Image 1 (tube, one colour):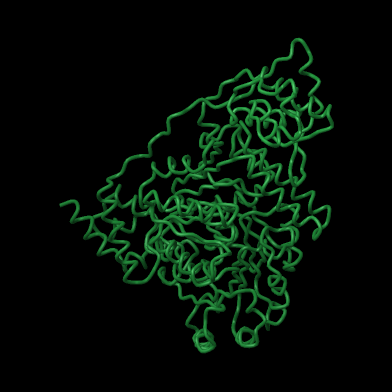
Image 2 (spheres, rainbow, N blue to C red):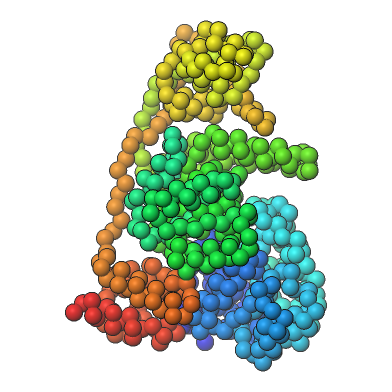
Length: 594
């Protein structure tokens, strides 16, 4: 059986995505490989397909229990026997799994890195035929990666224990050049083929919003979604997770939550509720999500700005894994920046100065993205070293109309206020400066006698607008925002320009736009097929999307197949799933058509 035939039979696709066939061919030729491919590009298929063409069992090193269970369920549904070895199994269950493996019951075994060097597992691996070791989330081996996992450093020692060295295939979604070099060296890859298929996810749309009230903005965003739409809402702190979760429950949405403050059993239950679509919305800190293979996530909202672009792109990339269109929206406020600066200051004494500087640099790059007026997708891709087009046509900035707004007068007032404070050898944060400009007579204002400044109460421009203009002045070099625990504003190199008689400054801003509607489908049929899928998922105790992705159901609604031959033409349906589910779905479509 050829690789394409394996792909069609077990996964229901007629062609490989970009980069997949090259990596598969290299593995089959006995070469080590490193695949750096964006989330949703199909990294798993790159080791699952050759596994079906090789003799023996493939070992897959995977960092998260949820990821293993999810992929093993999906593989078994696709007719590929697989199992996992991790801490959820009892000693008896582990013995049984390894016994089944010795008898050739599985083609893939997923294992947590901490279990690699256990006596029982090593004994099995030393006598088993292992042609391939796949290292998923390979960036975990690098201390410069986002999610360093010390147990990953044991992988080369594990490989050395085997009777014959297998092919090593490593995969990750995001890797800077330094992380890539770490993966190559620390895994001891031998003359590897390196495939970097690009970081672009064309099916994802990106946008950044600076709302005066994030809660109302989130409610407005959710109101435009189908009540069953699956999405993730990321928050920086546990407190925000609890508050946002409570608020959206109050709005009538079915949602759950995930953060490190919950006990293990509750986190596990909440994750299962999300994966099985019992609770389609997950509100979580970044403790949730690495390796989650939920294909039908249609939106990811960042309620707060993340700490860097790497974290943002990995988390946003959990949307649209089935190839369907998905939205990635971020809400930004200056307080988000201050929160991350506080976290950095908290660790300043425990890490090197170089690492602290690097963290601040990455945080400033993230803030720059939030204020960017150029293509947002292009901003991200440039960060990862690519040369994208100027207009992607699928982000908030490229879809918006912009206008140049004269901010000369307010800019002069803000800079003048900062200058007068510096003349008195005083520096303050943006909040105090705005209060002075708007004439707010509070305790701190009186304590520091700021109500006596000539700039006190000289404008009634809104707080939000003044904050936008101040951020623009920082980006343009008129002001400097310090990187202290409590950032303050100081005069920048260009501040003197406001004294020129011909000084004039504009700021580019978006004009309001109307969001385009998605292509309509036969919604009644789609709902009927979703209901059927959910019933089958409950009977088999599986997440619904492991039976069929949303994009597969949409294709059924468009094509309306009447027999198995036509059913096999649906995107995402192979022979195995056609044999399992073809009759019931064809009957549902026929019943609807009648």
